[in-house]
Length: 105
Image (cartoon, rainbow, N blue to C red):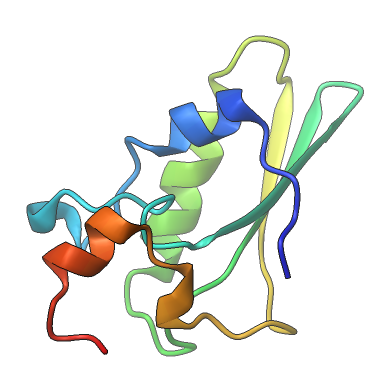
């Protein structure tokens, strides 16, 4: 399901990496983990998908996303939620990420 993603949020999260993909330079945006960002009265709500429900780095990714969005102008607070009603698939990968992860179909 495609959700709105403000350009400022995409830029902010382009520097946030899942530790498993940092060495390949693949951000959470390029991995297709960013589902949506909504802002109301200075409060941002970010929805993320995980590649696996067993991701050992999920807490780190959530903290990094919260910090990156929370540092943006006009954002007073931020919550990051993992979405479980939509599965992550390799179709969500940016073309550049898919090329770097050639082992995936």
